[in-house]
Length: 300
Image (cartoon, rainbow, N blue to C red; front, side, top):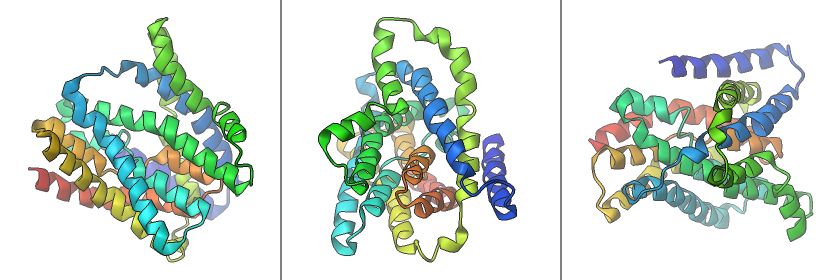
């Protein structure tokens, strides 16, 4: 319940301050900078080293990958009909392919399955985060370079390896093999705690409900995939792998969460359909409360 109140408080505060024009019009960019360059690397260093790989977790490991691959195919087919711009195509891909499996996902799992079952959602979330910090970051930066007409391989590589979340993810995968990074956990916990409130506040600052009509086609496509088609794909994977129990149910449930907040902020920061990015998160959270209930009863 506290997380739901926090979501409403942060987003609504951002919307209100935006309407009152208390802050500069581009104030969200400074907030995004903190989220992307400080809080997000801290999240990588704090939680990625704790992933314990096991064949028992195969559905949770493969689920986010299937969601991403399905999103890529969905966007390819949609783009053939609609002929999207680089920005729209990339924004649609990253918001479809990556879900909010922690800040929204964990409270939803606790509400429907009980707090003792949250551990089933952790691996799905960590794989989602690794996808974001690697292929998601590369996708956004590549699209940004393409818009700037700097699409050389060297330019893209330079951008990727100068992006702190990507570097932090690499460090989180490599460093624990040589040093005990858990000593930094108390500091990292404090930094990570700032991420969700500030990200949601930034979404509120950028949320322009008047743009729904303008972005409706892209929004309907993004919400259709993220809230309905993505969990259907993971449900198919469950049948294919003959998985069962709460691990399988929660993997499908997590696949149906709304779009990843941070990747939406990042795409908006690089001017890749920013109005769509803020709307797909805001509307996705609201509609997700309804669709997650439907998915819970289907899975039962």
